[in-house]
Length: 394
Image (cartoon, rainbow, N blue to C red; front, side):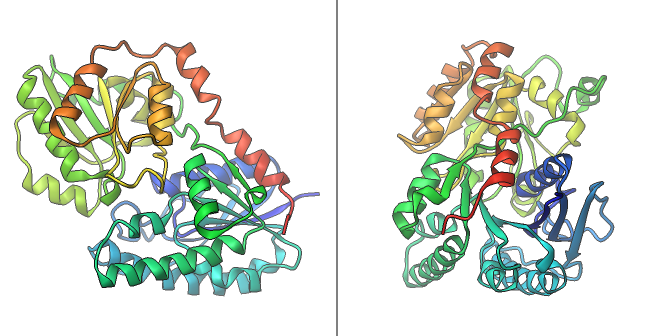
């Protein structure tokens, strides 16, 4: 019998990175197993936060879009204040039309506010499965002051109820699951962990030549590619790149991203061997990773409990050297240090990050066998199996 599955998230195909790309690939995987899939989503907004009014659509998946009229503020907190209530209303209106047909509802967090109405609108007996990409309560807890404490309390209230309303929760890391179970008192038996999966396509002939104009010939390359927001510590990232360029005249640094933070850095930071470029097309990603002598994955202090970078399996699949700055004793530190071409630094102090950079550039790129051994933990098939077979346990 064909299962009908409804994906709930404002972020969806054809967004090129982050949650939207993840959701698109999950939808493809489910449709490839014979499920009938629909997504209640926004017009594409990430990472520029400007709705694209005429997006391409994913074959075999129905996208129930809204929000083409919204103008998102520049400040992240204000953007979230617009996104959360708008998507709740859009989700509620669409579920009134199609929610009763779904056998499984996949709620992707964040945002989380929409989940307050989903249990009331879903078909009786439907399995509600949450996929947790970020713990917003972890990030809110890093702020100080009365207003920040009130915000943290509100986020915690919403997350607790959103997660409790799910029959099963899938986390992208063990740490995220442990923090959630401890903080919100959830039953660990209703949870599972599936690391982010590889999202890059196979190599495209001639792709390397298309990247030539992004790089100065004869120089080695330190590269960051992906979303740039608060949790990526963008100013610390650029400071590290500038320090590397000061110490190593045979290196260049490149940032491939989009969005408000990227535009700010591009306008204010200048160095002859540091360049800022838009995100490259997905078909060029394998070549970009192989072209990178070192890929850097930054996390701001105190954020490792809240998420696991989705780009990491792509870097491992390419065998590229990986420099990661993360919290000490974190799950990410353990995973990076298990990768032969990876070095995890647990301190943003300039001396510590430069020492880690010096260490990683002395390592060879990972072999295909070394990458494949680690990537057994990062598979889409395992996640699809879980989503199609989990039963209610409440």
